[in-house]
Amino acid sequence: MTAHPDQSNRDQASEDQSQTYASDALRLMCKYHIEPTPQNYQIWYTYASGRDPDLMAALDMMINSGRAITEEHCAEITEQFFFNEQTSKQVHQASTRLQALANSLLSHVEQAGAENSAAGERVATLSSSMTDPGRSDDVQHLAASLMKEAKLIENVVNNLQQNLGAHNNKLTELRSTLVKMRREATTDPLTGLANRRGFSKFLNRAAEIAQDSAKPLSLILLDIDHFKMFNDTHGHRLGDEVLKTVASRLRLNLKGQDLPARYGGEEFIAILPGTSLDDAVTVAETIRRALGDSNLVNKVTGDRYGRVTASFGVSRYLPGEPLEDFIQRADKALYEAKKRGRNRVHRADDNNAAHASPRLSHDIACD
Picture 1 (tube, one colour):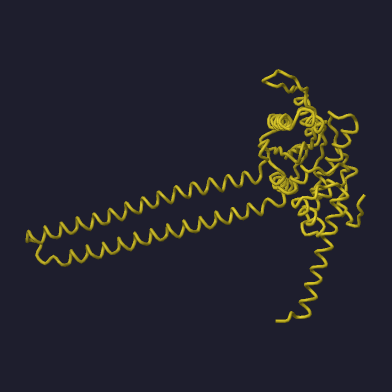
Picture 2 (spheres, helix red, strand yellow):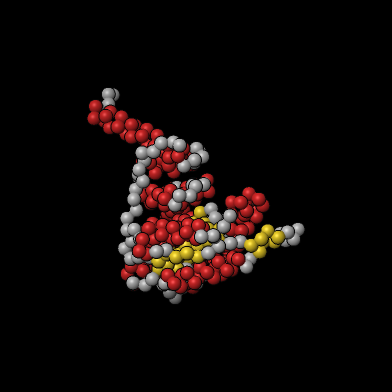
């Protein structure tokens, strides 16, 4: 069968477009020194195609910051924007199991109802067939028959109860699985804090509430000072302990309504609903001092590795602004804190807030 000319043209255009996206993706990876892995290629091909505005905004923010895009950053992007494909499969499987359980339960209930109805009809027949209530034989026969039917009904009820119990256990197990899946999809496995997906969901809701209620909303972004050097010197295991220490200090110094999250690599972020910029700066200072007071010690050897410090950027939400701008201003403040000597808190300047995020050009060349 010969393809229609219009269809052939569309296929050729689609193939040409895909080749363009592929070429742009490779150029981007080359320009920003990204390891050419299938995972990273997927990220930058999607970016080049322009099909996912949220992914584009996240990468634009990293590029605009002027800092190197590391393999950890790419892993975070993969987790945030592509992990949901696996999650969707798991949710689909769970939904299929739930539908099967519901159908099975309905079948058992209908069967029990039919058996009870049949037993009721037999009892009615037995009662009407008794011609002479005064005869001992008829009474004995009726009593024996009724006891038999009562036993059958009891068995039906017991079987139904057992089936209901078994289904209840399966439903409890399935509910636990779904809760675990939801938690894992929004939680960083190392620190136990929210991951970028969990943070994004929380931020969207917090911004809506702030917009509707006119209450303040602030953000703290922090980056561990000299983390790469620390990691390279003492190893990734100790680096992981540093990340856990920072996560612990965040939990201890934030309110119940606040959300701390691991934003990527050695970066952490916290959303503070109902908190003014001044108060958020105070909270950031408290966290900074708490970190500075923590000295890492090897419990086996007694070796001291020094204290952990971090630089902080703090911004407040300007109603109506794009959320990426809200985060970007905190990131710029963080960068300023780094420039001024690290281990300090710097607040964002609202006067320089932009209300539109420029789209980066794909017209690039490999350095």
